[in-house]
Length: 495
Image (tube, rainbow, N blue to C red; front, side, top):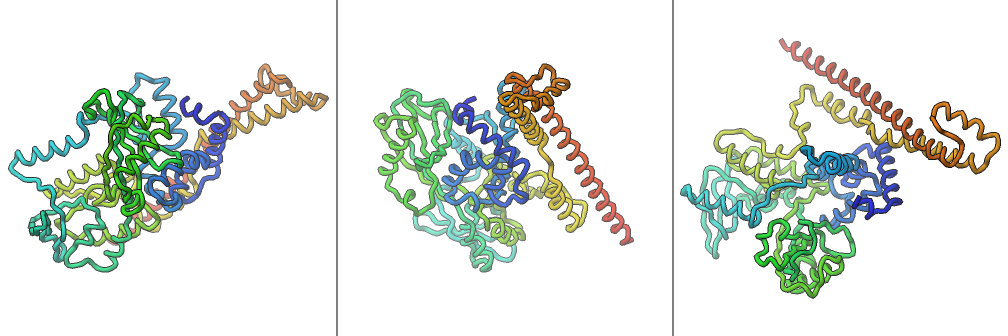
């Protein structure tokens, strides 16, 4: 209801029909973020909701962002699943355990004093077991030979030190890591690494002299009229994050490129910009801001542009033969993982050192890409890519709603027109009351016809889509089984 009030009935109706159009006439090939989102939400909602914020975050057009990023970050989400989640899970089944899509998770644990507590506890655990964590050191070089890393050159307070080891785990940006290899890596690998791009990030933290401002933990800012992209309310994450209960701490997040105007802006100017934009957005009064500070974070987001996949493949092929080097985390793998997936790659790398054989690059990858294929490359391309694209699954609810809307509206407007015109032509339409109980050629009958037409059209559309999907799925299944049988026969021919 909040979204409906904000959009208005007319805009909501246009969004709905745009969605139906997208389901009936989708992009056959999803290469870009725009195509991926438009297929699942419709063009109008894409332009209204997704485009402005996404381009603010990444600083490039949505046509330059790979669809792979959307598939990873907005996994399993579409307009209909979002509506189902909002209506069924929250309204009619308040006591039922929610079946929540990952993108719509609305409940999780948060450390009392913030996520830094996890890393403090980790350091304490390591030191209690007799090991050490060294901070404030920079890696200046990675010495390697053959398929092994031999040592890393580290620098602290201007003094160089050589650290040898049997196993190495790196979470530094993969582009930086490849540039620090000594001797230098092959030119094509270095060029591929340098082609990987990052989006940088800074937070303007403001102390506001108000005990409460708004109930949200964070707000995404789509408005192109301001530069801020997201506002965090740290007090709502945990009251212990703000020691003075009479004040609130807001974190205004700005997305930028290292070295651009926003990144190089002096702290006092950034704080003034944050105050002004808070007031512009109506979230707080500028005069209530007591103090502020700025935190810059380079290489916060690996960019999924149109060339990144090709470059990353080259880097992966180079690193794969290394026996004692593992890349982990968001920057170490140039993957826009969530924090839990990033931590999981590090934990699995530790298990690999102890003898396991985990493929870290498959963490947070769609399950279908992990399934072992039983047929050859040619058949795989046909069955797993070409056929599903040509015989793509038809959205039952989408087609049913479209068919119902068309049938209902046709009867509605035809009845209204005949009611206004009168005459003998309307007599033929009266025959509908033999099928639609209570129907008459009148204004009241028009609304009854709308309901009946929508119901029958919806049922017919859903049944048609269901039968079509069933027969196409059976057809693909038979082709797959036949291909597997041919592969098995080829296997027997070798004996």
